[in-house]
Length: 389
Image (cartoon, rainbow, N blue to C red; front, side, top):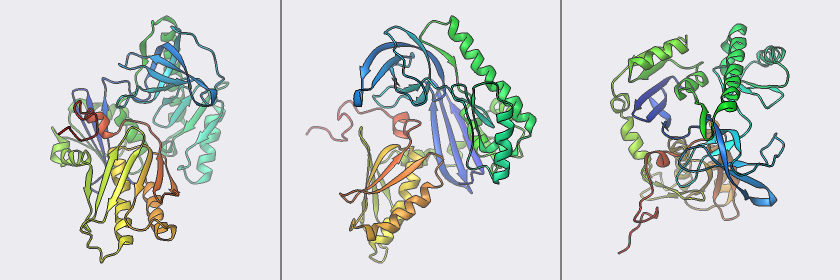
C-alpha cells in the first residue's frame, strides 16, 4: 500500500487513526489511552507463577491495567530467570488487553523512533527489507553499527533511507536517553507503575509512510503544532473539527462491526470472532457472477483481506469458501489472498488449505480488534448473539 493521507481524531480517551490511499480507507486503528498501550513500559509486580505447555512457565504481572498481564518466562533471546511472588520487574506491553484476556508483556524492551528501533537487550543491527537499493541498506547498517556503544541492538526503519547521517545519530542518542530514564525511574519507583508511555501513535504511522504521505488531517490545532514540531516533511496539514464524520468514516466503522458483508456479485461474507479463532464463511447468496463460484470466491478473497485489515482481526483465521474445496479450484483464491496480504503492514501468513477444505491464515496479534476496542460482550447472551426464548 502507498498511504497518501492520514486522518487523526481524538475524542476523550479514544484516538482514531485512518490510513487512506487515493480516497479509499485501507486501515483504521483506535487506541484507548485509559488502557496499557502496546509499547508502554511498566515496573510490574509478580502476582503468581503458572505452568504453561511443554513444561514451560509464565508469570502473571500486575501493571495496574485492571487485569494481570502475562509474561512468558521462556522469552526468546533472554535467559530464563526464577522470580518470586511480589518481586518487581520491568516489562513492556507487546499485546494490549482484549476481551477477557489481560495484556501480554515482554522483558526485551524496544524503543521506537522515526528512523530506528532501539533494542538494548540485543546485540546486532538489522535493516528493514524495504530499504532499497541494497547499497543504501548496507551503508545504513555500517553507520548504525559503527556508532553503537558496546552491546546494544538496533533495527533500521524504512524512513531512515531519506534521513541524513546526523539525524540518525541524534536519534540514537535520544533513544538511549529514554532507556536510561526508564532504568533510573525503576530504581526508585514502587510497583506497579508506568515508567515510559509510548508516544502518539500518529507519529509512528507518519514515519512508516513518510515516502508516500501527502496530507495529514487532524481535529485540533494543538495536534497540528505537535506535528510541525516533530516532523519537517513535505505534506499538507488540514484541521477539521470532525474529520471522521466529514469523510464518512464513522459509517465505515459501524459497518465493520457488522457480521455480514455483502459482495457486489450478490454473495455474502459472514465474519464471526470467537475466543479461539476468527471464523469466516463465504455464501453464494444471490450470486450474479455468471454462475461462477470461482469468480465469487476471488471477489470474496479481496474483500476478506480488506475486512481483516479494517477490523484488525488477528491470530488464527479460518475461511470456508463457497463450492468445492479441492486444491485445483482453490489455488487461484489462495493466490489472491497472498497478493492482498502482501500489502498488509501486519505480518500475515496464508498457511494454505486444511484437510477439511478450509483456508487457514495466521496474522500477528499486536492490538485488540475493532470489536474489542468499541464494544463489550453482551451480559445476556454471553457473546453467542442469541437469547433464551
